[in-house]
Length: 235
Ligand SMILES: *Cc1c(COP(=O)(O)O)cnc(C)c1O
Image 1 (spheres, rainbow, N blue to C red):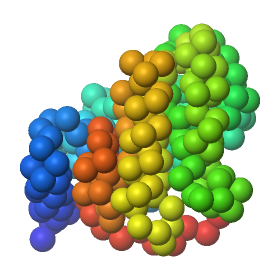
Image 2: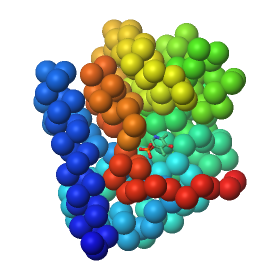
Image 3: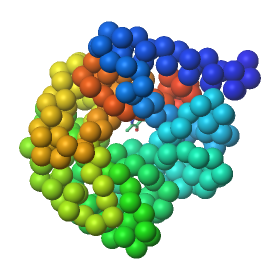
Image 4: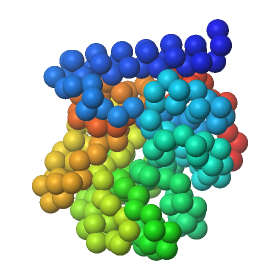
């Protein structure tokens, strides 16, 4: 099987899973944006996915993302940044990312705001929420605790150059994702009560997209199920 045939088959299977989950939840499949997480895969795969109709692509490391976005600059893609983000990378990320899913502290809001204003860009920013019981410290995957979401939303909505888009979360490792995504839906409700425009709920990956869709996810971030297994990355 050629790579494009393989990707096409994977994409059809993922779309089928999304359609089934939407049907079960009484939602329309077009409420869900499928974001292809292409980290560790080459720009040639991004190109093939675009050919197959993918419009949204995500990366989690700035260096890799910047190079791929540059390679694919002729394609009309929406680039998402989903990795933990250091303030010294803000300038670079803002130069190509349309949506930043991993905003989890005020210092980062300030750095992104300065970078966006200087570059004349206006990325949509999602607040990454930590759904680990213990809060952000143990999980190591980033994210603000639920009780810090509104304060960060206030900072984001006031920040020049940035648009508050909503929330992002990763289900806690090794735990049932259903209660975590239900909690995320509650947090999204209280956020939208104050900021009605903050509609995005980015949740669900290859292993748990059905749970995320039942709980109201608007964006699912799918890597493995679309592109295949990744080799372990040594940092
Ligand atoms: C890698 C990654 C994904 C995709 O995970 P899969 O299990 O491969 O679908 C989604 N979200 C984030 C933040 C990621 O880093």
